[in-house]
Image 1 (cartoon, rainbow, N blue to C red):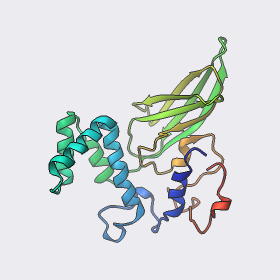
Image 2 (image 1 turned 180 degrees about the horizontal axis):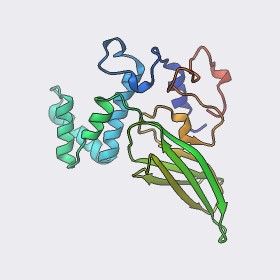
Image 3 (image 1 turned 180 degrees about the vertical axis):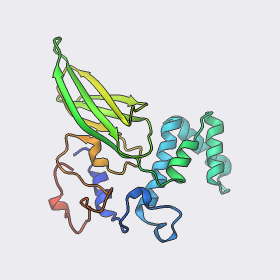
Length: 222
């Protein structure tokens, strides 16, 4: 449901060390080429795209390739280049996604809805961040008729937020970060309602393994 390809990515990339994703460091030679490190870099670039805006980010990369296609650029050089053309400070992304093992873990822990006197539905999604870092994120609600409503969450109070949706139809699903811009340690709790939960946060959680969950038996609620 919704993002089956992302579920397959989790299923076929095993965690080889008994640590959370965020603790598999780029600087540890023994785990340098393992999947979490690759995805950490991927989500770092996605976070830069989110900060600059897709059009500005794509234009900057295109210009960089055209002007420097024969050269090597360092991380610091790359960040300074993006900061110069965007007039934005991107140190937060570097400090928290590259030079850090901090965790981001958004969680929709409750959704309530009631019908107003005017016939519209007022739905409240309660969100918390179980991790140590925060990025502004998008949250999407889907109505019974399939309409998608998007809200942007720029701040949390005590690591929590109450996001309200007004709709003329009942909302049947709410999802944080529907386009998967951030390396969330447990993406399953980004969706409400949910029936099954898989997490890499601790050793007691269910581990996804292609030999344990054959395609024919993958849960329909994934």
